[in-house]
Length: 425
Image 1 (spheres, rainbow, N blue to C red):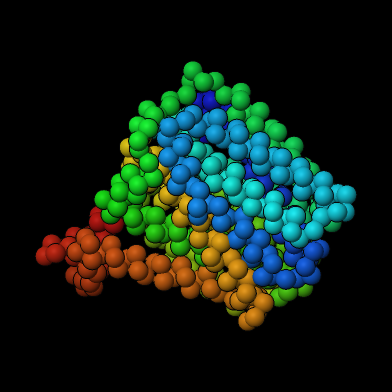
Image 2 (tube, helix red, strand yellow; image 1 turned 90 degrees about the vertical axis):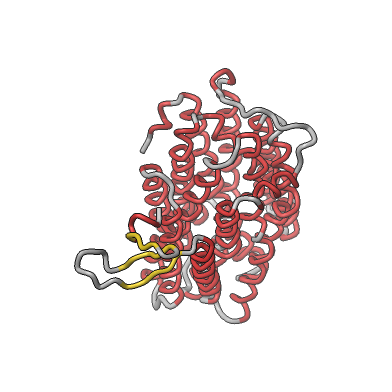
């Protein structure tokens, strides 16, 4: 489960990401509270538009950022992007602490963060393969997700308490310190112990990555799942905030607790993925768990029931993304990894500007529960379409076999019948 921790550079990087992710989740919670409660008085649409502004640059810039990551040192790109985001965090914290913050300030700084993040994300996604050997890459990806979701487990709840005790601005100031710590960890990594990928040719560009993906059926399926999960499955900053405040009448502590409970399921998913080899069947299972849990959460009668259901929701959401990410990274050539991962980042984050305002509008116009129901229906449709598509391409059929000497559920490929457990792997 912790094999990658034997690599000194990875240990430094891992603890730096723990610090950065903790600050990020605390700041996200504080920022959502700032927009929803302090600046707009429960306007879910404003929260949706803020999310859209933050992730819109991903849609435009990330593919070119991926081509840049294949040519330049990835760690250098990450450090520069982190410095820019740290400056943004400092400005916002100062505005909130001095009482001068306005909604348009938050939108502008969110857009600047999005631009820096568009360059940071593909470099970060591809950089892990330079820190550990390829054989340990799935483990390292899973542990990175464990650090991300460990922060999700602690960050929102801690932020909710701190918002009530010391205020929103000081929570954002803590995030500034976390940026400084992560940048220091990146700079402390030993360059002679990294395994940099061969730089791509100067003429290699975005379209080379698109053509590479277009010729790979497996990558197209995984990227389609990533797009739908990123676009509809991860709008928790809207649904959690609206459900906690508008539907159940709770405060910042209970709002933060939802993210922490979700983090419990998410960190279990990440550690579980670190123990086993990535398989498409686990992605499919994760989509089913997410859909069923979100459906139950949509109709949850009380806050405690809704909060408990966030644990399996977190498991399903994170399992699908981690395993799909591992399958993509371990199956592409090193020279193409930056561009392929830039497409991954663009699809995971790029659809958010399209969906977030829509989900926020559903919350305002039709009620808070629609912010949970719409993602549920979207991922359910994704599971059905992907499953049908895979079965058609691979000529697979499911049928009942009542034979006492064989499993009752069997998969038929063409005219050959094989056991279910031997096929979907």
